[in-house]
Image 1 (cartoon, rainbow, N blue to C red):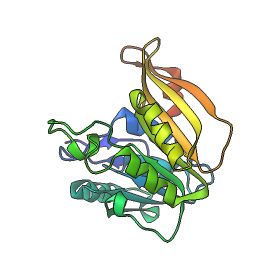
Image 2 (image 1 turned 90 degrees about the vertical axis):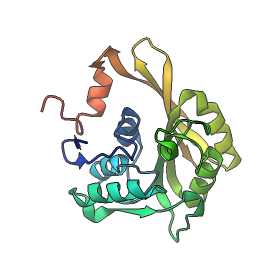
Image 3 (image 1 turned 135 degrees about the vertical axis):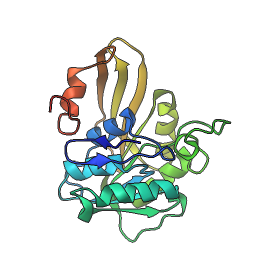
Image 4 (image 1 turned 30 degrees about the horizontal axis):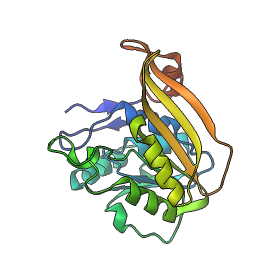
Length: 231
């Protein structure tokens, strides 16, 4: 499988690991990493989001976790072959068992969201078998610093459930981005960000395509430092 090339790094891909997709690119570009020194990614897959965050915040140190051995090996390869290799590491870890002596300024995840089903495609990455929303939120709340941000991208049909669960662990919604696949289309995804402290909620809309196979100005601006469009 050919690598997916960005401006400052490449992502080697594998049929056994969830591939580079729009959700990961959006999360990596939208997640608030300003002033973050310690970042934790849960379920790193190829390592895409961690590499994007390393590019966006040059002062950050990033720990990426995955329960899939193939993903850990692939992410490790991608990290070590990047210019950010000294600031990113990956560990084979079930997040439910994760323990750390330090807290994180950003915890970020593109989590599994389908209920368990008979599909054999990307089972761990797509189905809530090893990591459900409740476990993800609980562990995030335990490992988030007082000034930290917990950021996820999920299908919009899951958003209300996720927000309600977060409140159970004293995580307050502080940012909500409504993502439409195409201008005038239906709501598809939400980027949600939470904090242990209460803040004014910021809500915004984002459109990926202005017409079929034509990216919106919003998307081109958001990803101008990553994709090779026009390069």
